[in-house]
Amino acid sequence: MTPFEARFADTVSRLALAPGVGLVAVSGGPDSLALLHLLVRCRERHALRLVVAHVDHGIHPDSAEVAQAVARTAAKVGLDLVSGELGLGPGTTEGAAREARYAWLFDALDRLGPGVLLTAHHRDDQVETVLMRVLAGSGPAGLAGMAVRGPRLVRPLLGFSRDELRAYLAGLGATAWEDPANRSPVHVRSWLRLEVVPMLKHRIPDLDARVVALARQAGLDRRAWDALLDVLPLECQHEAGGISVASGSLRSYDSALAQGLIAAAGRRAGLSMGDRRCERVLRLVRSGRSGARLDLGGPWVAELDFGRLGIRRRRTSGAWQVVLSPARGDL
Image 1 (cartoon, one colour):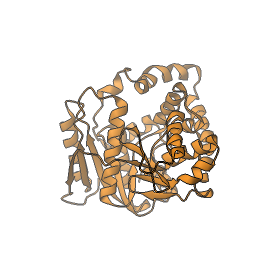
Image 2 (cartoon, helix red, strand yellow):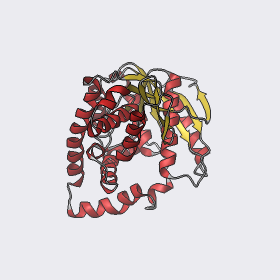
Image 3 (spheres, helix red, strand yellow):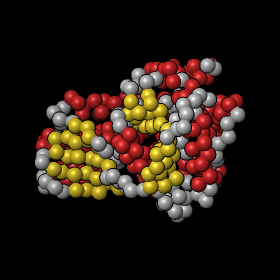
Image 4 (cartoon, helix red, strand yellow):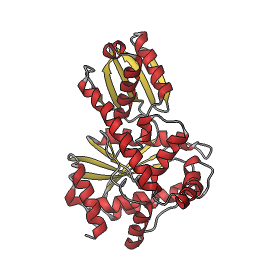
């Protein structure tokens, strides 16, 4: 095991992941391939049954070739593969593609059994995410950026940089697909990555450390709100695709507290909601109309039923394929 792999193994050990499925989201790009190789090489430090997941959005003309490359990699490392075709088309926005992808991945996790989804978000992604949320006028919870671990989503690479991961992958001699969108500043994230962040780092060399420190402090505030879900009499219940809480308790709280709890419930289900969506959900709760439903965008809905507020994903459509590995091997 190399020093870099040992560092990753220590990170995974600290996460203390429960035995179950470890669904590894692999786009075919360098970051997700590095994550896959690291998880395979550090198997003795976790109890996950690793399964590779690949989503073909139907956006890029070479997506079929990328899917085949991911399938070959999964077979090489001896892991089963689940793949999906969403058929979104080239005009799909970045946000819509992300919503559809996560809906499919969590649906896949529901089908496979108890476990977690593992994604390859790293420190540079975290910096970009926090800056994007600053520009969007996000509240304190949004400035926390991405959490290393949620109930069903784990990001074990947040402490690692993009350059480190690419150097590791190059050392393995592995080749990866480069999304052409990453080289164009047409989207806000790629604009930040290509133009804004380099300019800021020219004046503020420790930009990454400062933004990560901001995210850490905001994360402490977010954890306090999340803890209230279990402290207050909300009768939180986790269910496939979402969460539900006692709506009567929410109705009795003042608006600021109720909206903060609604946002925390959404986060626990896997949905980040801003003030406007939280206000709409609170109006639904205060209406008291059992059976009422509110569309929250993408696959998400809020439902009021028998004194409970549910925030959950609809089941998604899309081709589903499972490829069993012909052999269990190592890299």
